[in-house]
Length: 58
Image 1 (cartoon, one colour):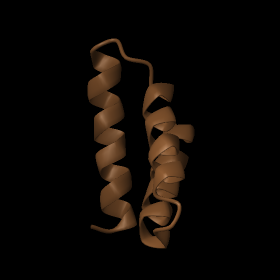
Image 2 (cartoon, helix red, strand yellow):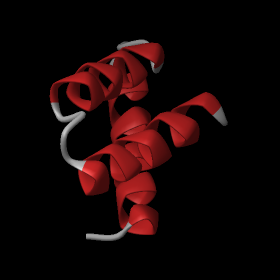
Image 3 (cartoon, rainbow, N blue to C red):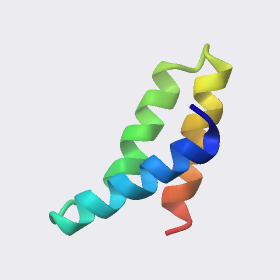
């Protein structure tokens, strides 16, 4: 998986969740939680950071 694939997935996820009434910031909150839990894994951190930036850009 690459960062563009990750951001495409996050965009899709936000679209699905917001269409069902969930707030988009909830996705960012989840990504932040995983980033903290996976802080020892730089590759995961990069993907999660890209995902959080994608949510913030919406």
